[in-house]
Image (cartoon, rainbow, N blue to C red; front, side):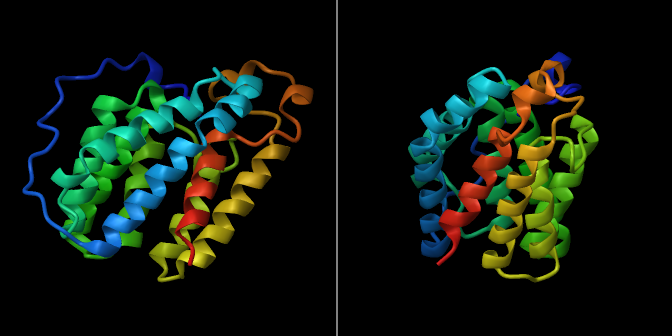
Length: 215
C-alpha cells in the first residue's frame, strides 16, 4: 500500500546498485526464487484487490521488483546476509515504483546495516521495519503491509519458526479486512463499506510470501 508521507519525497541520487561481490548460498537462493516467483504470479490478483481499495497497481509494483531480482540473481551476494539485504534495498529503490517501493528499500537497507551489528536476521528485519515505520508514519492496525510484517518479524526476532511467522502474517493480513478507517493511501478516502472484507494488498502479498517459504 501507499503511505502518506513518502509520496512527496524526492528521491536523492541513488548509490551503486550492486556494490558487493556475488556469492552463492543454495538455501537463500532457493528462498529468493520462491519469493520472486510468487510475487510475479500474484500480479493480477493483487492488482484486482488494489483496484477496489487503492491505485490498482500494487501487484505490478511487487512484480516489477521481483522480476529485477530474478534478472540480477547471478550478481547477488547470497552468502553474506548484510550485503544481500542492502543490495535488495538498492534494487528496490531503483526498480519499484510508488511509496511502497521507497519504504521497502528503506526497510531492507536498514536491516542489512542492523545485521552487521546483531548477526540475527529476525532482529535485523525488525529494525528495518521500525525505520520504515519512522519514515512512512504508519503503525500496525492502519491497513498497510505493516499489519502482516510487524507480527511476522516479531516472531522471527524472538527466534520463532518461519511457520509461526507465516501464521502471524496471515492473521495480520486477514485483520486488514476489518480495518475500515485509515489515514494512509487511497483507502483513507474510501467509505467503510468500500473497504469492508477486502484485505490490504500489501499485507496480502507479505502473507503469501511467508506462506510460500514454509516447508
